[in-house]
Amino acid sequence: MAIDLRSDTVTQPSQGMRDAISSAPVGDDVYGDDPTVNSLEERVAALFGMEAGLFSPTGSLANQLLIRQLVKPGEELLTEERAHIVRAELGAGAVFSGITTRTWHSERGLLNADTPLALAHENAGPYLVSTTAIAVENTHNFGGGTVQPITEIAKLSAAARERAIAMHLDGARIWNAHVASKTPFAEFGRHFDTISVCLSKGLGAPVGSISLGSKELIAQARIWRKRYGAGMRQVGLLAAAGHYALDHNIDRLAEDHARAKRIAIALAAHDASLINPAHVETNIVGLDLSATSMSAADFASRCKEAGLWVSALGKNYARLVTHLDFDDAQCDESISIMRKVLG
Ligand SMILES: Cc1ncc(COP(=O)(O)O)c(C=O)c1O
Image (cartoon, rainbow, N blue to C red; front, side, top):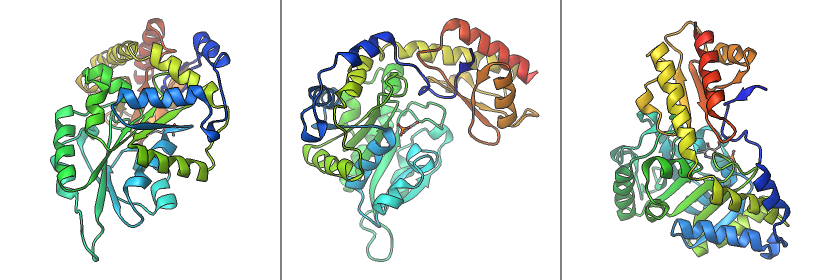
């Protein structure tokens, strides 16, 4: 069996999760009748100290349902240049909501509040585009699983609110940020107007994200979810997987982080140009292959021949993501495969 480290989305639902799915009480969620969906939405909202939540099939939809409430057509959203919202949602904010984006660059996607604050231009008048929201990704996926410093988030949020600029958190992997930094969920909630979280990444559910915000905003997002064709019926089956994931799979993320760190330390010992292990804070290992003779695509295909799947996400950038179907023995084997491939 190949070892699959392309993403933390490749996991199989455990037997316990499948049992929870099969025994979930359900109803028609478009009528608001599904008790398992309703309790999951309320549970996640309460966890983050937000008023309301909305279940959706994907993190991309959760982000899009939220940012369209914050940014009107022709206004702008600022975010880091490798954020999922601008790199991997295929222009959805522009296509569906008329949202303009401008981006800033930061090493590893690490937030420095001054950078977006310098870029922001609220009330820019009839000649320039007005900034109405800033999105922060935590952890930052393409930045290498970076945990955003809560002090920078707090500073950005306070200044943005003074300037009437809304704050959105793409918290697809906020669980990893919480485990790595010990920041309480409600502390994240305090600094943002809207938050999206995913149950289908490190937490191992097959499907599911939750959009969070005020009651009024989520009521609007619910209308848009239906309009986009994502009003689902007895979807408590999937929400049950989300409940199970929250009950069982948050604290164990520390194991994924430890294995990612082990991989980084072993590869840095092999070739220090590949990675700085201090930069591996969560479950993502980003490898810089530019000083080797191999492209990321070559590296990925040679690893695959040897039984290890990794992602080639840039010319010289390969990504490995640890997850709940990856154990210590597979960690050893992955390291040994990569050492051989690197020569
Ligand atoms: C940071 C981040 N946000 C949002 C998403 C979107 O999630 P989905 O694939 O469920 O649309 C992802 C997916 O990998 C992600 O990494």
